[in-house]
Image (cartoon, rainbow, N blue to C red):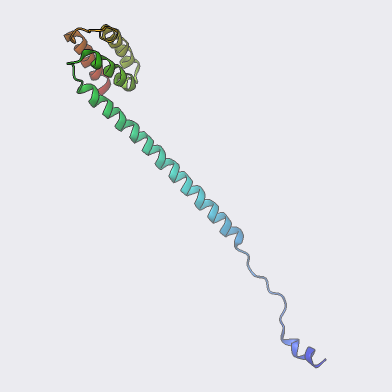
Amino acid sequence: MQGLEKLKDIKGIVDIPDISYYIFLSIVLLVVILSVISIVYLLNMIKNQKKSKRKYYISKLKNIDFSDSKKAAYEITKYARKVADTKQSKGIFEQLLKELDRYKYVKNPPKFSKESKKYLQLFLEVCCG
């Protein structure tokens, strides 16, 4: 019993503040904020990439080699389809396609006419501004 008398200096139970709930909430908030920032960054990258592709297609259209009219007609069709985005440019694109048909499906196509080049220039002016 002598051992029990020595134990009188033991204090009662003390409340320890529990902040684990606040730590959990701060981690969740941090993850949400980082996710939103990442999504916005990725969307901006995709948007800028589309703009740079459009610039590439327009530069290809401006630098078409008209010496091989069949190949040029196919390249114009390929790139102009990707550039046409407004209603007006799509309308001019349809006219341009009708003009290019005479170069595409022929074994020996004629040289590119000035009228066809004017349609291409009109299309580029409408698309590029």
